[in-house]
Amino acid sequence: MTELGKQFPYDALKASGETAVHRYGPSFSARILVERDLLEGNIFDWGCGRGYDLNYFRSKGFSAEGWDPVHLPENPPEKYSAGSFDLVHCAFVLNTLPDSEERLKILRAIHDFLPASGEISLTVRSQSNIKTNLKPTWKRFGDGWLTPKGTFQRGYTAEELVEIITPLFKDIIVFSRDPVFIIASPV
Image 1 (cartoon, rainbow, N blue to C red):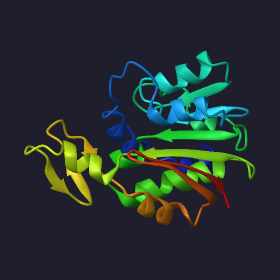
Image 2: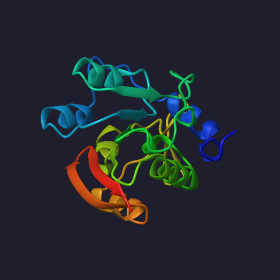
Image 3: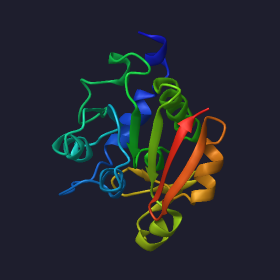
Image 4: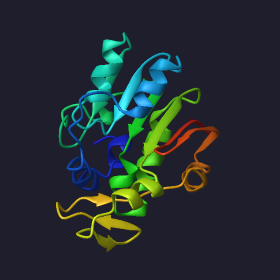
C-alpha cells in the first residue's frame, strides 16, 4: 500500500457511503462549478456516491474520475499519482462521518493529493438544514445525529468549516451557506 493509501480511512468512508442519496441530477455545488465556469483541468470526485456529479462533469466535457468506497470502490485515489487532478470535488462527505479525526484525515489526504496549484470544492450540509430536517427518530451522537438507518449527519456553519480547513487550505471562498459550499487552495 502506498503512503497515500495509508491515509484514507476506508472503514469510516464506507459507513459514509451508505448515506449516498438517489438524485436525478447534479448537486448544487457541481452545477455552480459548471454554470459559473469555475472548472479547469482534471477533476476527481472524492466520495462520489452513485456518480451523479461525476457523470454531470463528464457530460459537460470535463475530464473527471471519481471514487466512492461503497458505490465505486474500484477507483480509489491511490490509483493516481498525487497532483494528477486540478480539482477535488468533495460533496456531502464530511457531514456523514461521525469521527472528527476521520474528517481531518480526509482533508489531509485531499490536501496531499492536490498539486500546489489545485483546488478543493467542498460541500457539507448546513446546521440550518439539519435543524429543518431533524426527525424525532434521530438520536444525538457525538457532534451530530444518528438516523434510524444507522447513518450519521452533522451540519456546519460556513465559519466553522472555514476554521476547520484553514490549517490546510488558503484563498478560501464561501459560495453558499446552505448548503455550505467553499472552494480553496492547498497551503
